[in-house]
Image (cartoon, rainbow, N blue to C red; front, top):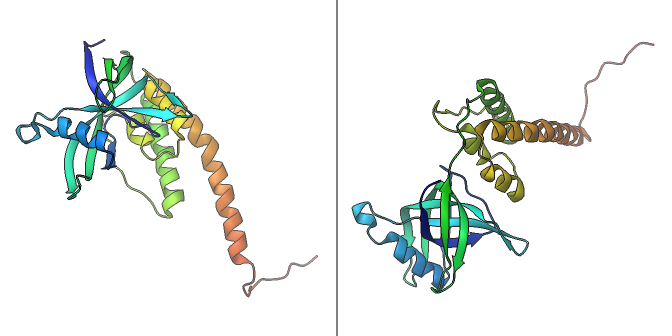
Length: 217
């Protein structure tokens, strides 16, 4: 485990994973103050990260992910901001502080356990992900996966996971376990989407003139 650190905390009804882009619209005064703190020193490459933790069903989940402030897209006259952030490091909260307008937390950072990556799991997850994207988009999707990236986090960006599934994925410390989790998810939802597409195709075909050959009995 890495050293403990105190970071600003942004509780949100979503989960962000390492390397995942997260655009945000900042409009509450307390989070304007938080972003002002985080962006201080940005011009010198010394911007400060903040943590995004899942706040769901009146529960604040202890495992979250820090994000780096990458870009201020829009800055409005009233102080509102449109920003682009990117997920960086996972953490576990140790203690929460409420002595500032925004929450802060003492955290410990963690990463995966050292295990040998199962290449067949990686390839299976990528193949199913591309199948899903083709079903959703109606066309073949071409995506490049770097050999050294953790494909599970890349895939989780648009895998159709709900927030609790994505939170579970974030908490796992094995890439192989995450890939197995994603494969099980795809093997469950892809046939459901295919069935739904077939139903839509049948509905669309009703009411149209059909040039059909009769069968002989």
